[in-house]
Length: 149
Image (cartoon, rainbow, N blue to C red):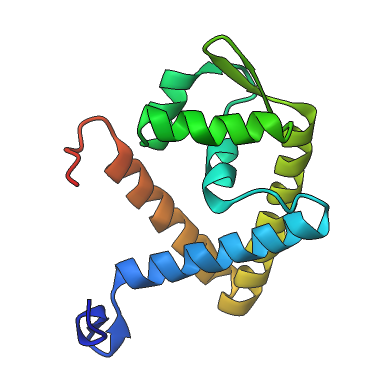
């Protein structure tokens, strides 16, 4: 995609803005994780951990929730299990103590970054941005919304 196609009315398009913001946040989270001793987590592994519930779930349910092929999920889960972030028993996966500890670091990093963004934008503007992004998320992930790739 050319730079010109990413600009609309003098501003980056929304896909570029959302992508850049996501990658910025993930970079900060991974930096905080590395600083806390969790240097072996990739973005994709972190994405898997963040999509897990406090209760065990099946590998099939997790693959559907994350939207990746089962073979890829199996490889990622194997690495997470090897590094003691998750427990896998038969077809069920749950967060191990190390995974829960790492997710605590993630939550702290997210909260600090969101506080920083609220300070930069102003609380009212940040609250409105958060509300609208949550609305967009709800609408685009609803079961009635057709999925196109």
